[in-house]
Image 1: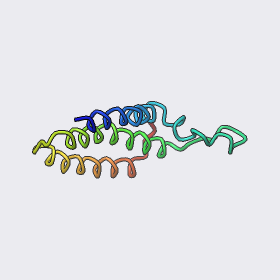
Image 2: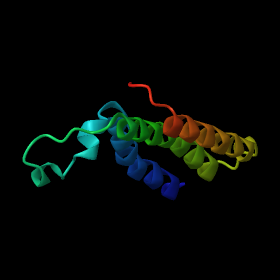
Image 3: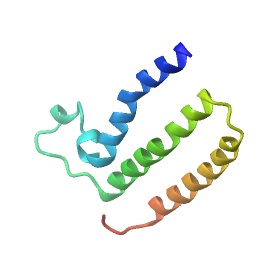
Length: 101
């Protein structure tokens, strides 16, 4: 029980950084790297879409993994297979779509 509480407490900052990365992808990509550029770098739309996609995958997948780790729920094993399918379809859409967001 104590290790589950410790796990949840340690995951909270990680989840917060994932949410920050989703809402501010440019800021999160350049965090700690701005000193390398003389001017503000311009990020491509594909990089921003990819960052938002990976953040969304983290926001959805992390709770599924944590809940599956804490509680031994049988249905979560099937939801992970569906989650992998969503990741593959989303990655395909991200890498083939050229629309601006």
